[in-house]
Length: 76
Image (cartoon, rainbow, N blue to C red; front, side):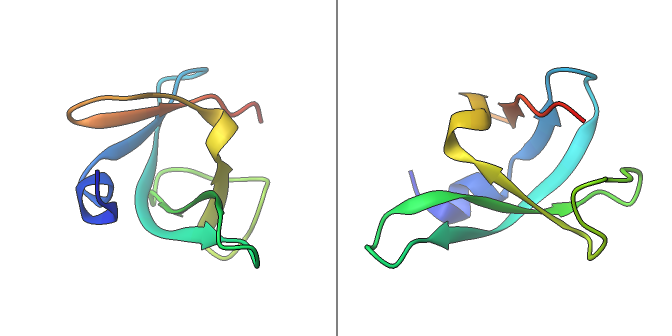
């Protein structure tokens, strides 16, 4: 699966069913491994994590990647 395939999917939090946003980037560590994704927050989501419109989601927070959505487990 390519990053462009993931960017077309909505990111949904399984705890409240709300759409978080869409993937805009991935996080690459200095050793070349990826530690997570960067999601541009939906205009309807107010996050406590950051105020700049982006949120980082770690790979271990991703529960399921489906055809249309990526389900994540984020506790606010």
